Length: 187
View 1 (cartoon, rainbow, N blue to C red):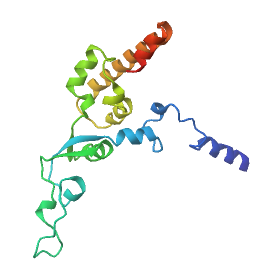
View 2 (tube, rainbow, N blue to C red; view 1 turned 120 degrees about the vertical axis):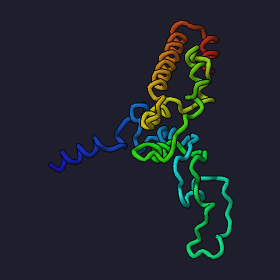
View 3 (spheres, helix red, strand yellow; view 1 turned 90 degrees about the vertical axis):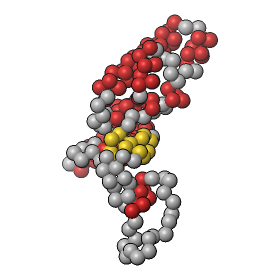
View 4 (cartoon, rainbow, N blue to C red; view 1 turned 120 degrees about the horizontal axis):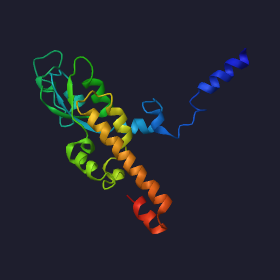
């Protein structure tokens, strides 16, 4: 019985798991690609007043002395006013912005906006994803949980981008000379 339990626990261990195909493990706590993708910053707009959170959320707040005459050190400049634009990591923006209260309205990262969508619709292979959005697919997996209105359109575009780029790579690997392969893999 003890041997059965140890074998069972060894199979469940993350050390014994093959983590090479990271898209299969999107959302996993230990997946470094998921951590890097969800740490990218996106702009958000605050919908409600957030009291005493300005020193944590705003980078432009300077360290000032607390107002005189107050016992608890509270000052109005520590509040994040409604309508203020802030930049947060995607994981934090989704945690605060989704759900019932929706304290934030999440803007899409630049690679998922209309300008890039139009380019992707024309020819997905033109955009250098390594420079413009190195975690394009992993960030797309994270944005699925955001509840943004444009998520279905983004998923359709992401699917088309993946299929077109995969087709280009397969064509280049099967039919091209060495020079053509080097020029296409540089993208």
